[in-house]
Structure formats: C-alpha cells, structure tokens
Image (cartoon, rainbow, N blue to C red; front, side, top):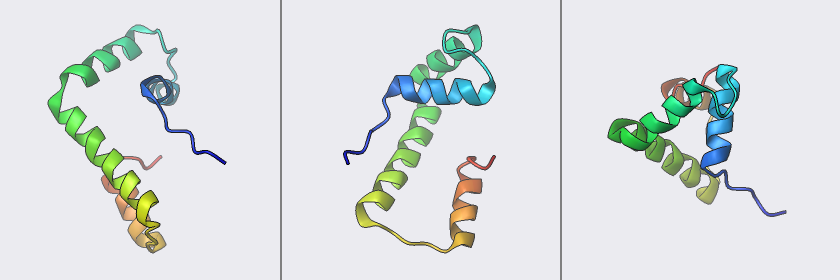
Length: 78
C-alpha cells in the first residue's frame, strides 16, 4: 500500500480542523500567510518533518516514555 505524503492543503486542513475553523476562514488564511513568511515557523516545521522522515526511514523504535517526551517537546500533545 502506497503511503500518502501530506501536501500543504492537508496540513492547513489539519491545523484548521484542530482550531475548529474552516479552511477559508480568516484565521486559517492568516495562519497560512504567517507560515509562508515566518522563518522560525518554517524551521520548526522542517525539523519536525525531518524527524518524522528519519523515524520512518530507519524504523526507529523508542520507549513509550521517550515517545511521550518527544510529542510533548514538539508541542503535539493533545
């Protein structure tokens, strides 16, 4: 089964869904504009993406505690 790599629209939909916003809402449009213009956010996004790709490529196995700390550090804890 071929893995689906998210595109920009998928990411925006995910962000906006988590904010309870429609994709074309003013808040989501502002977020998209910010992400396009903010080097810090772009760096953060790229580092998260690189980490995910690394874990997928090398099939890294980590403890549940390490996984939880990584999720918390990346700000992905719900």
